[in-house]
Amino acid sequence: MCTDVCPCFQTEMWKVENGEKIYRTDPMSAYGKLDEKILNKHNRTFDPKSEKYTPFVFTSDDFKGVISFTECFERW
Image (cartoon, rainbow, N blue to C red):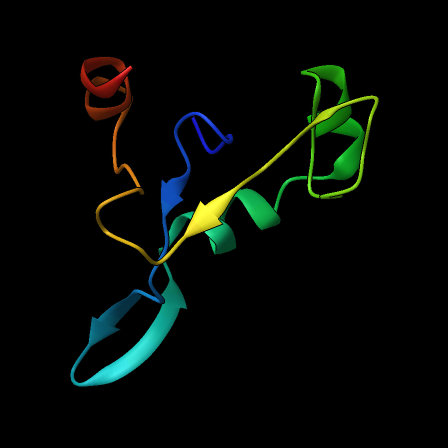
């Protein structure tokens, strides 16, 4: 997921309580909290130019982006 084959659908989403934004819940924010060293251990990176690791790919195009592994698997 979140690769060129199955880019993650990205919109800015928030956990809201009493009408106030508490924290972001979208994929870019969630994955962005992971340390790059941990990502690299799993062959992933946020560096879009990396040739060593697979970069995360996000899109706001709902025709290209997926929201689950199942959706990615069905499209692939």
